[in-house]
Structures are given as structure tokens and as C-alpha cells.
Length: 361
Image 1 (tube, helix red, strand yellow):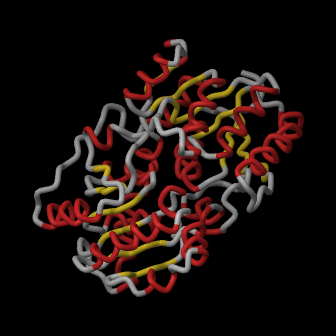
Image 2 (tube, rainbow, N blue to C red):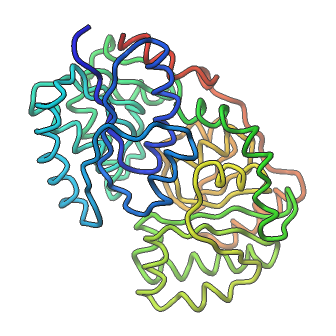
């Protein structure tokens, strides 16, 4: 073995998966260089996660800040060239489907450094989502595919990727959640708003399809109004969502929603505590669909497609778009005990990091 593995991260979903991966690499005596792009520029969306998850400070920080996706990708690629020269990594490991993922893979491939893609093969089949483009393009140039569920293997084989490069290993989110679950439950963050465990909904929205268009966001607020009439809900506002509420002139309407308890971004342990104490979750996040299934927590996803079909087929997730009538009906099912339960897929056992480390070692 010569040279370290460079692990590239840049956004909240990456950081949640980084903690168990680094612990597994450490146990396998794999040298690593953690490089943080800075894609998430809000402290609670990034650096606070290093603290909450007990992750050492990154070895390299590229200092990317609030720019367009194209601007971020171009700057990441340009700055990684010097990092590659300085540290001579033998493998570049990218995680998930954010801008940093694709930019890191392109930079590594251009420098003739092998690429390992963690969470490979996921597909929503919706090319209007930037994340879908990132997934497909990253997988087109990767050398190792670490897949979280069987559907990912099928997608990669259909795309003519060699079977020997594809490894079904599970999902690092499972590792991280299981490591933090007990501490999260003891935190009891719901008491901050005077709520009871099991007596509220947890809600997040940030996808462009839901927040960039004023009409779509107005439809989301109508969904929240009807949910809030049934039960209180906590809404940690993503910086993007807050900006769009202000730009669309909807912030006042948002603040008047019945049952609303709004707050800023939460660190991972705080948000996990919020989930563990909730009755159900409404979201458009890919990661939260997975976390809800692991916790056997009813999840209504305000999207038409998902890159995680297992959360619908075996889990607690239901795709509901912005259909207020259907959502209210499902909320009633949850409250009256009629909603479906989860069965965990294979390899969702908390040992994903160890399997990845064994293969790369």
C-alpha cells in the first residue's frame, strides 16, 4: 500500500457518513487525507457536524463558499490539483451525490487517480434533479462502486459497469445513526419547544422543485397548514429555504402557520434527537427517507421520485408529491396506527464502514 486515501466531503450528508468511515479506516490502518471543500458554508450545516460527530478537523480545507453549482465545481476541480500534488493519494474516495462528489471524481480521473464512489448506483431516474446528474456522471468514471441497496447493483449492471467492481456493502448512514441513536434519544430536544415525545411532526424542505418556484412553495405551505391543524411540527429551516421564503414574499405566511415551531439548522445529534422523538416526518431529503426507515418512523416524502426505492418497498417511506389531500389522509393513518412498518434491507447492520475498509485495504 502506497499513498493515503483522500476522502472528499463538502455537505451535511457527506459529513454524517464520514464519521463511521474514518473510524473503520483507522481500525484497518488505512492512512487518510480528509479534504473539505466548504460547499456548505453555514456553520451549522458543516463545521458543527465535525464537532457533533467527533470527527477530527479536516486535513485540507478548500474554502469554497456561496456560489453557483457550476462555480463551486470549477473551483473544487482547480484547487484539488495542488492537493493531489502535495499528498499523492492512491485513491480518491467521494461520497453521495452533491456537487463536491462529482467535482472530486472529475478532478481525480483527470489526474489518473482511481475513484471510489460510496453510495454508488442510486437512481431516481429524474434528470431534472442536480443530484441525479451527479450520481450518473460520477458512476461513469468511478473504479470502485460501493452500493447501499440491491437496486443500485441492478442500475450499475444495466449501465454496463463490470460486476467485479460493484460491492453491495450497505449504507454508512446506518452506521452513523446506530452509533449516535442512544445519545440522541437522551438529548430530548423536543423539550426545547415544550413538546412531548411522539406528539409532533419533524419537517424539512429544501429541494429546488419545492422551494425555487413560488407556486410550488405556496402548495407546500398549504400542506403544512393542514398538517399543523392536526399536530404541532418542528421545521429546521435550511438557509436556501429561508432565502426562498423571503424572495417569494411567503415568509409572513410561513410564520403564521398553525402548529409551527421554526428554528435554524440543527447539528446531526440534535436533528437525530428531533427524529427519534417525532410521530412522523415530512421531507424532500434523500437521507431522511433512509433515517426514517432505520428508525421505523413514518415518512412522507414531498417528491414524485426517489433514488432510494428500498425505503418505499421495505421501509416507511411514501412518495406524496405536494398532494395535500393525500398527505392529510396518511397523517390520519399514522395517528390511528394504520401506517406501514419497516423491514430493514440486507447489510443495514451498522458495519458498512468495515466492509468498505476491508475491500480498499
